[in-house]
Image (tube, rainbow, N blue to C red; front, side):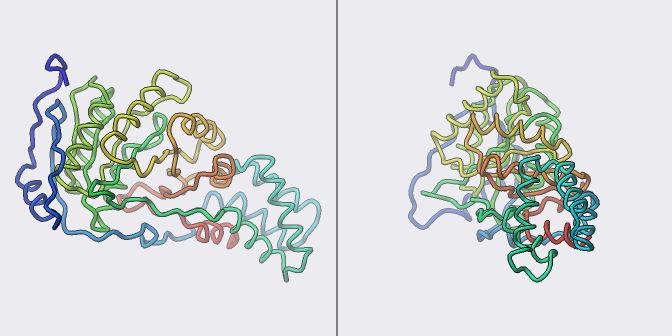
Amino acid sequence: MSSQTLWLVVVVVGLLALGVLGLQRRRSNGGQRPKAQQSGARISSAGADEHAHLSLADSKRPDHNRFNKSQSVIGVALSKVFAAQTDTSWQELEDSLIMADAGADVARDLVNKIRSAYKSGQPDVKLAATRVLTDVVDGGYVRNLNVERHDDLPAVILMVGVNGTGKTTTTGKLAHLLTQRNSDVLLAAADTFRAAAAEQLSTWGERIGVPVVRGVEGADPASVAFEATNAGIEHEVDVVLIDTAGRLHTKQGLMDELGKVYRVVSKVAAITEVLLVIDATTGQNGLAQAKVFSEVVPLTGIVLTKLDGTAKGGIVIAVQNELQVPVKLVGLGEGINDLVAFEPSDFIEGLISQ
């Protein structure tokens, strides 16, 4: 990289902890690892321990009542159908699904499937609804995050999304979730347009004991992501978690830049997950965002934030149906432990139990 750039020399504030981590994590093959190039990226904070990879499905399952807003819309309509299968109650169910942002076509299809299942021999309409909704929401998707090291390299997770979705906070919470499962994590603050974003991620790093690589304000995001990945390789971490700048999906230049980040990082390590963070309260607009992002980078999963505070839980069904990409994580509160694995059965139980 040119010495004329604004980059500083790599400064390792957490040198002692990272050095110990490196000694602990040397593989028995004794192979040499690529070293991070010098750049303006600097590493701050540190902390990790011996690890064993575990599925995020092992995380604490949320109380289904935390989907309360979606319950209040869809659940009430379901209750009316359970009480009396009239044309009016079926229409109210379809309307409630549309109001919850499942989409008109999806809502109509779901109601038809439930009615058909009930008429085809299901003992009651509640059981028919439970089975149909569970099958649709589950979709046969694999929802585990791919956080396994491969070819002696860390897994790389790219966090993407528009401004205001809670992406940086979600990145910090995901790092915490991974460390709780004994993965060694390195955070990359590749949002170089907002100094506050890098500061926010650094604060998360200090809070959870995870090193953070960040660059100077206005630096090339792809370079920061590249240096962070190289640092992750050098220090033998399990997961490099890259927070990218929030960008409007309508701004082509910014979307092209995101594609550049993906291509540059892919040269040194495989990007195992590209997670799109969507504010569930935006409903169908979130679906429009997802479509554009999916054209720029290969999305592997969706993270829905604020799902506990919205009546638009139907976006879960809509986004999976449209993109064939699973919802993998959901935000159900402000706490550090309120980012959890999405479990279709819990979501449906919340609706049916209304």
